[in-house]
Image (tube, rainbow, N blue to C red; front, side, top):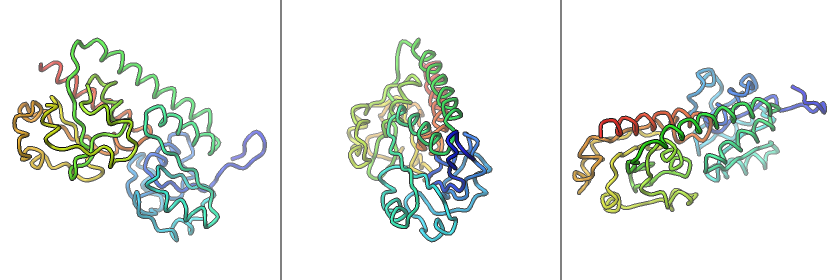
Length: 267
């Protein structure tokens, strides 16, 4: 594919995260994606591409064998493989989004890099419209339930910024909202006792690709009296819907909104 200046855009793209693969396919460049991580879920066609590793564990030789002219990466957690690829002479675009605005910006950046800027603008516009619609709908609710999101269970790690923002857009109130500006997971560790003290009315959990064990949550000392536990308001959210910072966050937003709305109606 050539741009207006005659420059050849990347023809062989390797994606190191699920959301970068999804973005490429959503922008109409899926035919140029030659490699994906094992965590890829959307779209189904992306699963047919060569697998190059996991989120932080990659085979450099597999990536290089695919002869990519662009590798798409995400976050400081992939800095080691990014450094190796740059050292091997491969072009790498690594985004590091944490907020919803940064997610939308990353889509625009990737769209420009692969020669699909107009498609990226359209996708971002659609996502902004959905965010606005959900926000306006939930703004009419007089009360916002207290929501605790658990990203990991040992130690307890609460949600990254975009998760906290999704909870608020969906009509909830993140009980650890003050921690969302902390970019690293280690800075978002909380104690079980503090969760009990804040007494969430809804618990959402997504353990970074590991199935949530509700029995573990229910068995925590002192948690039986937590409002969410007592009323059975504990919900698992698939990681691909809420921890993958790309278009699939809209799936997560809809799910969280449904949970909060059901809580409002039952209350």
